[in-house]
Length: 206
Image (cartoon, rainbow, N blue to C red; front, side):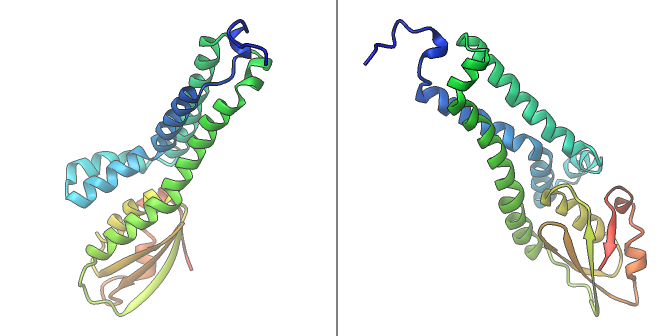
């Protein structure tokens, strides 16, 4: 077997420590888009009104979440470029030889993001909402579909819904369905649909 010590950097095999480093940054960039959702949920659960209000303002921006997703992949690309440049492999051949590192970096970024959005958030929101269910009288039910960008925004919608007098409880069904139990003498689906948050995230009564 030909020794690799005299080979140029772009021809050297990718070392496992570099792959682990790519996985670490992939995890960081995968979580980044959900950082504000995570912070908002934490502050909501612990009852820190000021903190929840602060992060809620960002979550109420319709293009904020897609922007963070784009930013996470921009950072991942910058990391990939720096890695290739540091190893003098910033070329088509270098990219090909470092495909394992790049695959781990981008694959982890995407995988962690999907895991947080599709598994972690629905579980946390379900557990949290069951503990904070109100005891207001509820004799009616309505289901709405809300165009939220990720399940992490569900807490924002639930908190806004519970500000309406007559709302007994709200159940979230991933990815964007909300079952609302309310007192028909105190509110109505039409009144619920007039919430300001639904000017940002469109709600459709099912």
